[in-house]
Image (cartoon, rainbow over all chains, first blue to last red; front, side, top):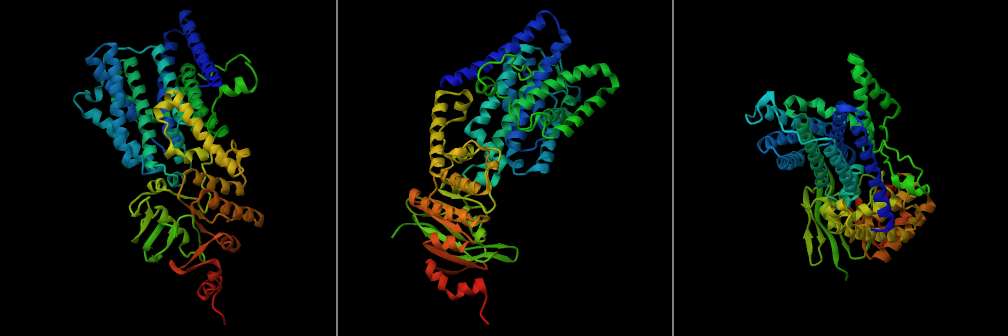
Length: 324
Length: 260
């Protein structure tokens, strides 16, 4: 690693630390209150799920509508395992179990369905999510439609913040890896990628499995934080909620996903004051963004500290805190 | 005589009632430059697709030299054939348009990469070392083809001739034994075609690989090919050196029709 890299990595670390301290200070002086804390946690959870979905939709170009199904697997894994072992270790084990089960199911589902493309794949993944939900409703151990209550809570904003950062770093580094570049090549031109020796199905499945694993983490965190799960939490609408974050931020842009997850989270809070008009305004905002920024807020571009700090010669301060 | 590196045996493919490629027997030797010509719809690109594995033959077989002997590759999918040393360009350009010129070349090196994904995730020193090595190789390829100045341009922003050139560089980055060029001069003006002619000769000389070329531009084909196959209605009509073919009555008939 040369000096430029160290400098670059350190400046990102500094930015992350600054945001952490900022949130920490607001909690000390109780500026945002309990409700604000909940919002921050939910934003972080959505962010992890959305970054995972962007890996599938944006990077590998496979349109999946089944993200809620994989979130449900993570949520129920945490509900069952951490209820049985009510300690922080139990919680960690439950996350790992969720990741593994979700990954295995994504692999089993991905191998046949990723030969489909476009609309067909969307319908197939939608079906998979529904199947997962129906199985959960009908299984005894998951207590059917009533769901599971009293799950021990090991999630606070620090945990979610930390995991969000890890998820983002993971995805960004992954995209830049040889495997990540191969996945993008398959998206850009499948036939050309194949002609260069790239096994297209393999790379599509890798992206799909990783996306499902991130969804499982998000589901697990949510179950523990809300302390309950029920099948109604993971319907088609949940997939759409995450999809909106990805599309609005810009398909293929990780920074876009991060910004949108935060903006929509905050918007949701502000709109609480508008009562029944809330969903109308929310929908209007979505429509307006799609009219003026049809490729999403950030399109396919990425926010780069390298450009801001190093190319323009020196630090201009004010490190654009919207990009966590 | 040089080793036979690619051979077909009565290769045929039918689409419904149409036999697009009919009992074709061709062979290519090491470091040979072969032209594949024929009127529109003769089955040239279909033959390429059979050789590169995009289509499965209805009948007959394709064999590739694997270092010791010719091996039947009928059931080997395209990406595995690429790993056996087959590379190609496309009639309608297929670049990774959202990537830069350099990244396009780097992606072609995917299967040669030793860097593990885990290394990339944790940004280990090994990752940086491997990346630097691959980059150096990609840059030296771009250097040879005079594309170093546009290395950081998006592939979609290149002018047409340069895009064709990049497709060839990208194919060469896979370190192939056989390079298939599907109408590389299509849509080029005479100057660009001249540059391409020199380029193809240069590739054969520098990289010592077999090149099989589909082309309608007769000046180009006759200038570079050592041997030609002429296809008509899916069948091999004639084979021989460019001067043989130019005097072949059947070929002239296929292209120009009969006299009187």
